Amino acid sequence: MGMQTKLPFMPADLTHKKIAVLMGGPGSERKVSLASGAGVVKALRELGADVTEVDVEGPDFVFHRKPRSFNVIHGTFGEDGQVQRILEARGNSLHRRRRRRQRARDRQDRNQTAVDRSRRADRAV
Image: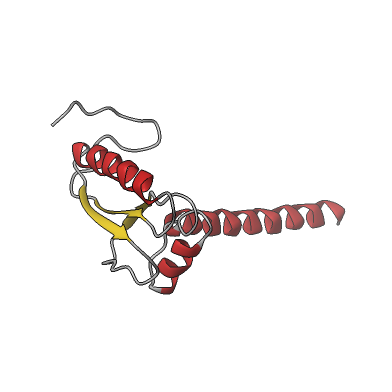
Protein backbone atom coordinates (compact mmCIF):
# COMPACT_ATOMS: atom_id res chain seq x y z
CA MET A 1 0.00 0.00 0.00
CA GLY A 2 1.12 3.52 -0.78
CA MET A 3 1.42 6.42 1.55
CA GLN A 4 -1.93 7.81 2.69
CA THR A 5 -2.44 11.50 2.05
CA LYS A 6 -5.11 13.38 3.97
CA LEU A 7 -7.10 15.51 1.59
CA PRO A 8 -9.08 18.47 2.95
CA PHE A 9 -12.34 17.17 1.48
CA MET A 10 -12.23 13.56 2.63
CA PRO A 11 -11.06 11.55 5.62
CA ALA A 12 -7.67 9.90 5.19
CA ASP A 13 -8.94 6.61 6.60
CA LEU A 14 -11.77 5.04 4.63
CA THR A 15 -11.30 1.63 6.24
CA HIS A 16 -14.45 -0.48 5.90
CA LYS A 17 -16.32 2.27 4.00
CA LYS A 18 -18.29 0.65 1.18
CA ILE A 19 -18.07 2.63 -2.04
CA ALA A 20 -19.32 1.72 -5.51
CA VAL A 21 -17.38 3.34 -8.36
CA LEU A 22 -19.53 3.74 -11.48
CA MET A 23 -17.44 3.85 -14.64
CA GLY A 24 -17.57 3.16 -18.35
CA GLY A 25 -20.89 4.22 -19.78
CA PRO A 26 -22.36 3.67 -23.24
CA GLY A 27 -20.97 6.89 -24.74
CA SER A 28 -17.93 7.68 -26.85
CA GLU A 29 -15.86 8.49 -23.74
CA ARG A 30 -16.18 4.98 -22.31
CA LYS A 31 -12.43 4.17 -22.49
CA VAL A 32 -11.51 7.42 -20.77
CA SER A 33 -14.09 6.77 -18.05
CA LEU A 34 -12.77 3.24 -17.45
CA ALA A 35 -9.23 4.62 -17.10
CA SER A 36 -10.42 7.36 -14.73
CA GLY A 37 -12.42 4.81 -12.77
CA ALA A 38 -9.38 2.56 -12.37
CA GLY A 39 -7.47 5.51 -10.89
CA VAL A 40 -10.31 6.34 -8.48
CA VAL A 41 -10.62 2.67 -7.43
CA LYS A 42 -6.87 2.47 -6.77
CA ALA A 43 -6.86 5.67 -4.70
CA LEU A 44 -9.91 4.66 -2.65
CA ARG A 45 -8.46 1.22 -1.93
CA GLU A 46 -5.18 2.82 -0.81
CA LEU A 47 -7.27 4.82 1.67
CA GLY A 48 -8.78 1.57 2.99
CA ALA A 49 -12.18 1.61 1.28
CA ASP A 50 -14.11 -1.53 0.36
CA VAL A 51 -14.60 -0.69 -3.34
CA THR A 52 -16.97 -2.30 -5.82
CA GLU A 53 -16.26 -1.55 -9.47
CA VAL A 54 -19.45 -1.11 -11.52
CA ASP A 55 -18.96 -1.21 -15.29
CA VAL A 56 -21.97 0.68 -16.63
CA GLU A 57 -22.74 -0.21 -20.24
CA GLY A 58 -26.29 1.15 -20.35
CA PRO A 59 -29.41 1.86 -18.27
CA ASP A 60 -29.83 -1.79 -17.21
CA PHE A 61 -26.52 -1.98 -15.33
CA VAL A 62 -26.32 -4.15 -12.21
CA PHE A 63 -25.71 -2.11 -9.09
CA HIS A 64 -25.82 -3.55 -5.61
CA ARG A 65 -26.73 -0.73 -3.30
CA LYS A 66 -23.82 0.73 -1.36
CA PRO A 67 -23.85 3.53 1.21
CA ARG A 68 -21.66 5.63 -1.07
CA SER A 69 -21.22 5.83 -4.80
CA PHE A 70 -18.74 7.67 -6.97
CA ASN A 71 -19.71 8.49 -10.56
CA VAL A 72 -16.76 8.53 -12.98
CA ILE A 73 -18.83 8.20 -16.18
CA HIS A 74 -17.84 10.85 -18.68
CA GLY A 75 -20.03 12.45 -21.34
CA THR A 76 -23.62 11.56 -22.12
CA PHE A 77 -25.29 9.31 -19.57
CA GLY A 78 -22.83 10.13 -16.79
CA GLU A 79 -23.03 13.92 -16.88
CA ASP A 80 -26.57 14.54 -18.13
CA GLY A 81 -28.46 13.18 -15.11
CA GLN A 82 -29.42 9.77 -16.52
CA VAL A 83 -27.32 7.78 -14.01
CA GLN A 84 -28.62 9.88 -11.14
CA ARG A 85 -32.26 9.28 -12.18
CA ILE A 86 -31.69 5.53 -12.47
CA LEU A 87 -30.04 5.35 -9.05
CA GLU A 88 -32.77 7.43 -7.43
CA ALA A 89 -35.44 5.19 -8.99
CA ARG A 90 -33.63 2.22 -7.41
CA GLY A 91 -33.49 3.89 -4.00
CA ASN A 92 -29.88 5.04 -4.11
CA SER A 93 -28.52 8.44 -4.90
CA LEU A 94 -25.13 9.91 -5.65
CA HIS A 95 -26.13 12.99 -3.70
CA ARG A 96 -28.28 11.56 -0.89
CA ARG A 97 -26.08 12.91 1.89
CA ARG A 98 -25.83 16.36 0.27
CA ARG A 99 -29.63 16.56 0.00
CA ARG A 100 -30.06 15.49 3.62
CA ARG A 101 -27.70 18.29 4.75
CA GLN A 102 -29.56 20.79 2.56
CA ARG A 103 -32.90 19.80 4.07
CA ALA A 104 -31.42 20.23 7.56
CA ARG A 105 -30.12 23.71 6.60
CA ASP A 106 -33.53 24.61 5.15
CA ARG A 107 -35.25 23.56 8.40
CA GLN A 108 -32.73 25.58 10.40
CA ASP A 109 -33.33 28.62 8.16
CA ARG A 110 -37.11 28.29 8.56
CA ASN A 111 -36.76 28.03 12.33
CA GLN A 112 -34.46 31.06 12.45
CA THR A 113 -36.90 33.04 10.29
CA ALA A 114 -39.73 32.18 12.69
CA VAL A 115 -37.61 33.29 15.67
CA ASP A 116 -36.71 36.56 13.90
CA ARG A 117 -40.39 37.25 13.14
CA SER A 118 -41.31 36.57 16.74
CA ARG A 119 -38.62 38.96 18.01
CA ARG A 120 -39.78 41.70 15.62
CA ALA A 121 -43.36 41.20 16.76
CA ASP A 122 -42.28 41.46 20.40
CA ARG A 123 -40.45 44.74 19.70
CA ALA A 124 -43.44 46.16 17.89
CA VAL A 125 -45.71 45.63 20.90
